[in-house]
Length: 206
Image 1: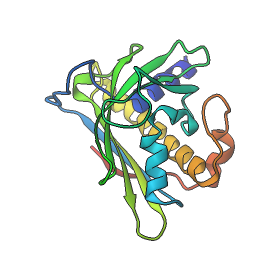
Image 2: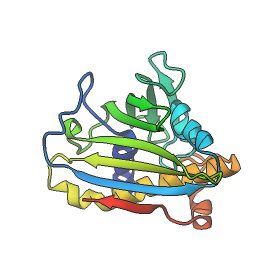
Image 3: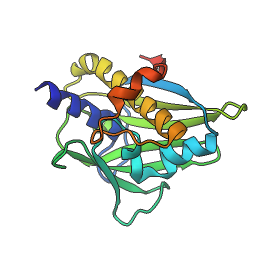
């Protein structure tokens, strides 16, 4: 049960979010989490790994076993779709899509268009990926997750787990970009490397 719940939370957070074919209304009250971390690499390289290599999120996510492009997508651009598998058998998965992307500002909005069942109000949830050039050869990467659970009371319960998953993914991204070594659920590298890096900073919550 514990493992299943962790995987469920990871799929919610790393998936991110709306019903197929529609834009989110974001009309209901939602919670927000934003975490960030500094990476010792150029902003262009971080953006490439985090967004332009959209189908390759398994290169750095400790919670994903495999990922690949679907529906003819070949790179991270508006409309690109990917599949993320959250267990070894590939029976728990999400299909995701980039709905907005600004390569100059290095901001991307990501949604889920199909998935296994999970307690998320997808019409009132979305996420933003951002990269900031620090001007000294380093970059700051961040995830901002705006979410409403279904039922709504689960939001407070899930918030801590969401934060942990977002922060862990940023640590995986940092390690992958700085060393070239992949971090995912299949190779189990995260447990060995996570103590080498500072924890991602929580910069927004409500």
